[in-house]
Image 1 (cartoon, rainbow, N blue to C red):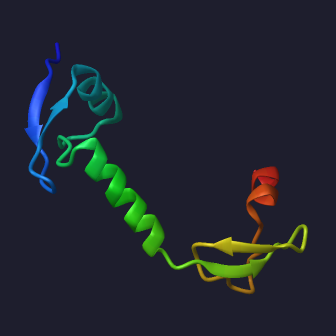
Image 2 (tube, rainbow, N blue to C red; image 1 turned 180 degrees about the vertical axis):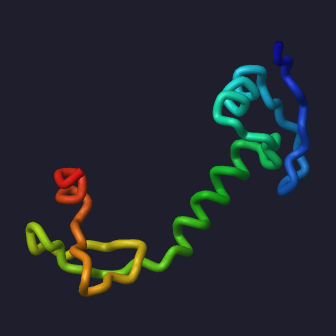
Length: 89
């Protein structure tokens, strides 16, 4: 049903293959657009976006340890460190 396609990365301009398996995955997830970037450029972009996020310091409401969170803590809601957060799920 799906065939490999060769696409051009919009960042680096290199050709990359959008495999039949990737196309099937995109279809299962309901994605409508083909990828515009090759795997290396997608990874680079994700990493740069993660680095540019501002992190805030908070005290964990459960264990009292200092935690870094990607949102500005507000007094009306508890903030948990990553290990306590997974325990509260």
